[in-house]
Length: 162
Image 1 (cartoon, rainbow, N blue to C red):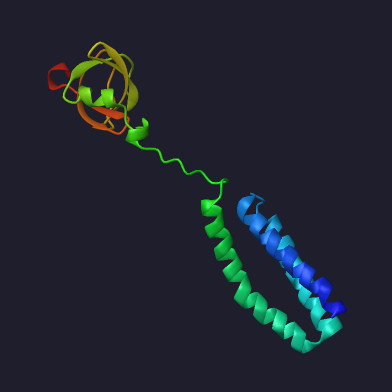
Image 2: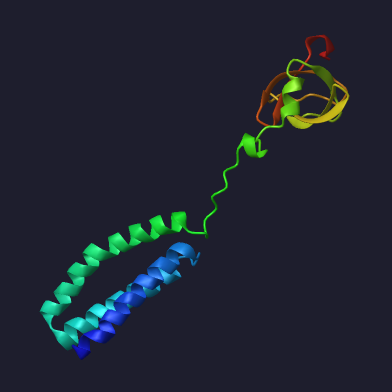
């Protein structure tokens, strides 16, 4: 029984290191350490105890390690370490500025050359805009054709083509 104490401690240390790998970003270093702990534990059991005890350890590892990993991930999901705040409109978060929707269909003037991105003056406001891929010179009249997220898409107005 005394010969099994060190391999059991190594196995438990390996489990702790695997759970630490889930929580801490180590780039796989903790996984290598855990594999070394499990490997040395199995080597010790096979060489100092018996082949039967070694096979029992291998079967226990194959069955218990996936269970421990899944349980660790589930416990991590409900632990205070994880972020449980959701970003939603009810909490005041929005991925799109509400004021950008008011620019749909509006027209203005390109303040910078659009290659295809730049700045335009629309409804007396400076707005970061993007063209549909065409080159639009500074001072050209533009019209807003779409507002997609935080992106205002403009096109050159027909009557101002040069």
